[in-house]
Image 1 (cartoon, rainbow, N blue to C red):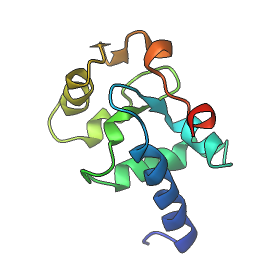
Image 2 (cartoon, rainbow, N blue to C red; image 1 turned 180 degrees about the horizontal axis):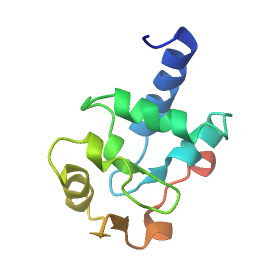
Image 3 (cartoon, rainbow, N blue to C red; image 1 turned 135 degrees about the vertical axis):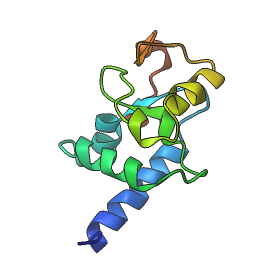
Image 4 (cartoon, rainbow, N blue to C red; image 1 turned 60 degrees about the horizontal axis):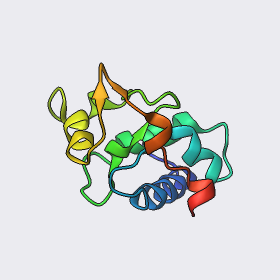
Length: 112
């Protein structure tokens, strides 16, 4: 099946935004989609995060769902790698939920 050219371009744009998320901050799939002018494409952003498959230049661990839940954690090696990466940046996670989500949330629409 493979990735279509327009999907690849979208994924590249998602990665560019993701690279700009500051250390110690997170954003959501939907916030990235909205910033890219595709507000209803949060799931596609999730697919892009899954497809980046551990690329060190894309901090996929900083992208969570709109409620601050680590919904993508099963795509990281090891059971708690996503949480460990976030905690190493000073973000508190309890039961797969980012604490003080509004405080650490970074919105590309207002910051880029």
